[in-house]
Every structure is written in structure tokens, then in C-alpha cells.
Length: 115
Length: 114
Image 1 (cartoon, one colour):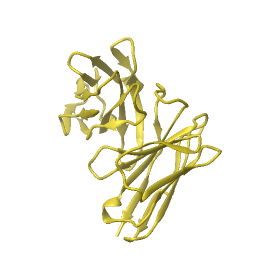
Image 2 (cartoon, one colour):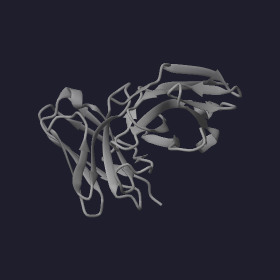
Image 3 (cartoon, rainbow over the protein chains, first blue to last red):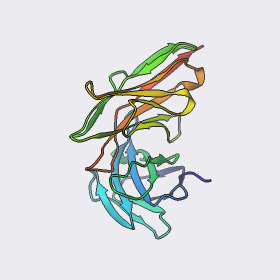
């Protein structure tokens, strides 16, 4: 049973560029959440997708957007990259239902470096 | 507002000794509490969670945690530490009824010495 997978593993971009990160959830999961983990910090919630819609959003600007596909996989897009966007981006998957007691399982992350 | 505090940046313990990693939380409703571990250049691995019921929760790799509502704490414990337990540990909280997002602490680095 494959866990949460993310691609690519590493990415280097320059300021002003755009980036797309991808996530495939754990088998049987239909909800995907994205987190940003800056160096030396705990992960910060970006947003969550369920039934192909953004269900909840953290304190991130509109430059951060996402999408969920019918097969539950998800993309995170970041436009107009800033140096401060350099971080480890983590995807987590879980089961249905707001308020669900289900656990969020995390992928290995994508390390984004903005030069 | 929800928040999590991990008061220790680093915890050092000798192999074979018991370990404790501290966590306190603040939520407006009932808390769902989680512990995750992160190894270098890796994502987060789930260790255990408290939803309801018994205050002592047992998880993976011999770890356990005790929920204390009066002290709003959820400390991670292990009776006998292993060198391989050395990693970064994160406590996280969800407000049970109002949100799905996890709020993480800043992490505690556990160093187990041989």
C-alpha cells in the first residue's frame, strides 16, 4: 500500500517564477492538505482540498493556489516566487469529513529553493 | 486561537533512560492532539493521537503520551530511549469541531547518546 507521494523531491527556481508541486494521497484517502515548513520551524497550514474544492485556508496570500483532481491527487501552485517561499512543502492526506478524527499522513515533501 | 507550545528546543537523554518531550496546547473547544516525528530530509511520520477516552495513549515504536486536561498538556514519553529515536518531534493540535487544520509546535530535537 503506497503512502503519500510527492513530486518533485527538490526544485530550484528564481524570484518571480511560478512553480507547481504535486501530491498523490494514500490509498483510500480523499482529502489533501498542504503545509509549508520553513527551516527550523513547524509546518504551517496552507489549505485543504476535498471534493475538488478548497475547504479551508490558512494565512497565505493568493499567490498560493491549488487544485484537486477527480482521482484525489492535488497540485500546489505558487506564483511570483519570493525568496521567503523557500521551504519544505508537505502534503498530507486523510479521510472524508470535516471534524473527522482521522489522522493526516504526510508525504516526504518537496524542497523548494528560490534564488 | 489555537496554539501549541514545545518549551524545549532540545532534549538530551542517555540510551536506556526514560525520555519525555513536553507539549502544552490551547484550543477553544475539545482538542485532538497528535505527535509526529521527522528524520533529516524526510516528511513527518505519525506516532500517536488523542481523540477521546483513556488519557494514556500508546503509539508506534514504544512511544506513549499522556493527555492532561487540567494542565492542557500532552507530553510524549518512552520508558527506554534508543539512539535511533534521535530526531525532531512535533506536537500538533486540532480544534475538534471548528477546523481540520493542524497547528504545530516549533519542534523539539531529541538527542539520545550511547
